[in-house]
Image (cartoon, rainbow over all chains, first blue to last red; front, side, top):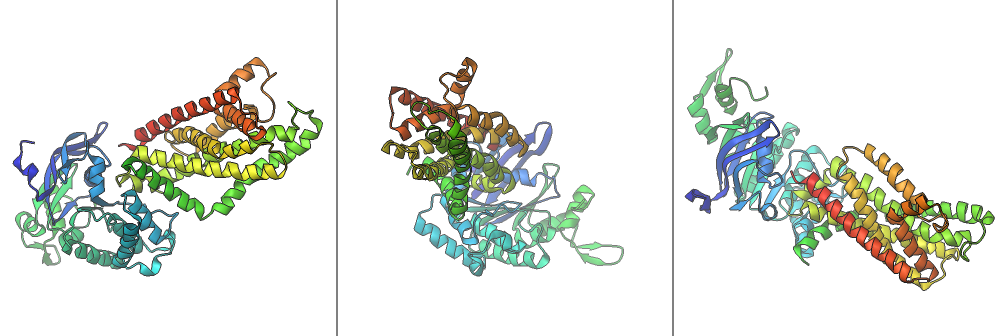
Length: 264
Length: 254
């Protein structure tokens, strides 16, 4: 690594010309970014922008096809096991263990990280409290609401006390109330000092949670900055629509950069 | 414990935990079919079959039925069971997001199937013993035999699962591999005196060698020939495990 920043202890994740292609299809087209300790960093973009491929490479479950990606100073392609030991992952689709009860999901998941029996028990109880699921400890997974399942999935991602938490579209599919509740949990986590990386196609989510973010489209990063700076530099403070003048948001940034809306 | 076995054991323990909650129903399932075969073939058909090698027909087929349970238990578990965990429930995806590697996951699945198959074999052995069809205390070796043979059949099935795109593939595997193995491995008739093609065919079927070891244990006639069969079973198990692990790495490393 010629780049001195690669060894900066405050850089938790660093991508250099990172690319991923599936045969002829390029999902991620050579992107660069750095994520710092303690921040919440977002990947915003429409479906198919390359967010999930980028997330999966950071999770060390999928190898890059070009460039380099280091998580906690480790190369994801060569040291994937060591990376996974130190991160937490909340996947896009729920994959809670439906054969196990709520508390068992935490106990069993902790065993994959090699936690001792007493530590597994302690973590399971702590995380049930964190996820407001103490009353559901012995419930079966299919009995949980969508919001409860998400909270359990995030709790599960924390069993190994990860240094980085990767959240792939954490609130997709949730109703507005459950989304608000989840954002509250994520803010609590951020305040506790966990570095968070999240992908989303909700502008509001990115604006509320992220310290910094990149906007992705067609596998490329279009722009990077704080939510406020992005809005101010690309569209100004307010947007005039035919019927009203309203505060500008990240959706307007995306519109400005691509000429189309995020849900397009 | 070494980290490698820690990961594999965590996976096996997860499956055993799930199995434990429904162990009774599942062990009854193990009993069911072999006992039906024992009653219909052993005591029904057996009345018109002359003694073989000094054994009644029921005595002759009992050791094979004990290990056919091993084959069916391990195969069902590593086809339909594993495919469900892999492709339907997302259990494997969740596991692979942790430090557990595809190879460790594969080993954990195989250990679990081996344990379940070994327990199934002992369950059937107890029933067979209750019918007075066990002649030797060497029959206790059915437990380790059931475990090793369970891993063998599990590894074959898991190798198939790692190349399957849907449950459909398992119909072929059961019809083309498992059923012929059940019928032509010397469970129901002695291979000595069979046509040459059948004898040769039987030698490539893993179950043939497992049946011979089981019969030697239940009759107490463990000799050099039986030892050769043990060696064949162990060699086939190593080959099968290597194949399943390679399949898991190919399917699960993205």
